[in-house]
Image 1: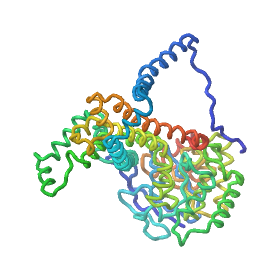
Image 2: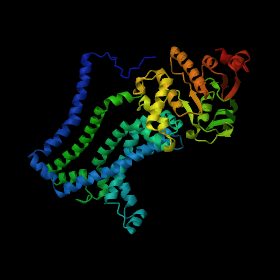
Image 3: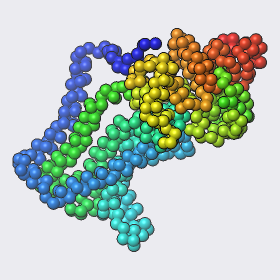
Image 4: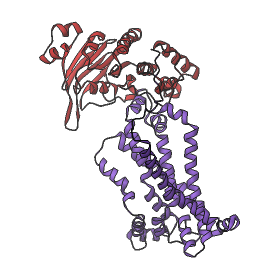
Amino acid sequence: MSDVAHSVHRATPVTTEPRLTRRILTGTVVALVAVLLFAPLIAVFAEALREGWAASLEGLSSPDAHAAIRLTLIVAAIAVPLNAVFGIAAAWAITKFDFRGKAFLITLIDLPFSVSPVVAGLALVLLFGANSWLGAWLIAHDLKIVFAFPGIILATMFVTFPFVARELIPVMMEQGRAEEEAALTLGASGWRTFFTVTLPNIRWALLYGVLLCNARAMGEFGAVAVISGKIRGETTTMPIMIEMLYNEYLSVAAFSLAAALALLALVTLFLKSLLEWRYADLLAATRRH
Amino acid sequence: MFVEIEEIAKEFGTERALHPVSLSIPSGALIALLGPSGSGKTTLLRILAGLEFPTSGRVLFDGTDATGMSVQERRAGFVFQHYALFRHMTVFENVAYGLRARKRHERPTGAEIGRRVNRLLDLIQLPDIGSRYPSQLSGGQRQRVALARALAIEPRMLLLDEPFGALDAKVRKELRQGLREIHDTTGLTTVFVTHDQEEAMELADLVVVMSMGRIEQVGKPSDIRANPASDFVRSFTAA
């Protein structure tokens, strides 16, 4: 009984396509990635730096730009953790329990993906705006949602709701319930089981979902544009500020802010890669056996 | 601990997994629930563990009603079909899990947990694998670690769901012997589920033959071979 299963399987080639075919396929993908993803990104940074670093930094240092950056970061800092919690709860309920209306709940989670963000923004304005019953009640109690910070949070959360749940559901489905059941038979409470077994098993999918959710939360335009009212320096997030600057022909300022927004997204991606690289050994060891 | 199952029935929606079944399991016995898939044997085992709850009927542990008792309170050592080891924990952490999960005043000290885990790893004859991850173990080693993990909580009984199902023939034979020895050492009331009649006959003191959610026959392996109670038992145990 000294046989140790190898945790690393070396892939044996099963494809027999000639070298030329492979080169063409690979080349096509590289060309597509270069044209569709890489070139526009380079263009943004090039445009931002067209008049040099100084001009670019000046574009970022206006009070309105500062306010937009701050607002975007705060919105992400609130919306992303809340959606992470909701996403975990939804994925947990869907994958670990059987109940009526499960298929409907899954469809509901996908709703923000299929509804245009502008429509979502309009729906929120209709629901919470001054002309609605709920809006009138809110105004009577001096609670501002539309054209204010809470509205931006709601719109962002609506649009980014599916990201975490969508990442988690397939992973949790595949892992099944056996490990959780094992923890329960060993005397662990439900919460302990969640924190010591479920959460560690989904941490990579969760991290990925949170990063996607974060990127989208910072970049959301349509829904926020409708509900924020675009009050300069107050309810303008980075994407909205970028559009306003661009429409005012302040090209360097617009692209500087755009570059900053892209950079924030790139930082999150870089963090993910760093974590994957740092924990590569652990990842390999704890893959499904 | 002795276990009594009184008229237990289980329905999943409209599907009947168990017709009312009754069974007495004497203290310290090694029992096999034998039957083809869909016979209700795993459902019965999971009801004993508290992972499922019966639609009707009662379960008694040492004469007291345990039907509504939670899975944690039952303290049944459970070995899952595919072992369900915690893949992100080392073998040591896996075995220590149940001790660490105890309430503070019942929890052994760190040093004591270490001693107990090492004693269990000795018992399963794998003393040096504490720092490995489950993915680095063979199927047979995983099964034995799962057994050690279940034993760590000082269970009142041991329940095993197809414990040898995923192993090749040679390892299976070895581990059968291993389970027998562990049962004899600990004296724990042990129930295992299997679809392999040879395994049931060879290992168990008492074999419970099940089919379609009913118990067909209960008896010593030799009695069942000599006097099968029905055509089903005759054909299934002859296989």
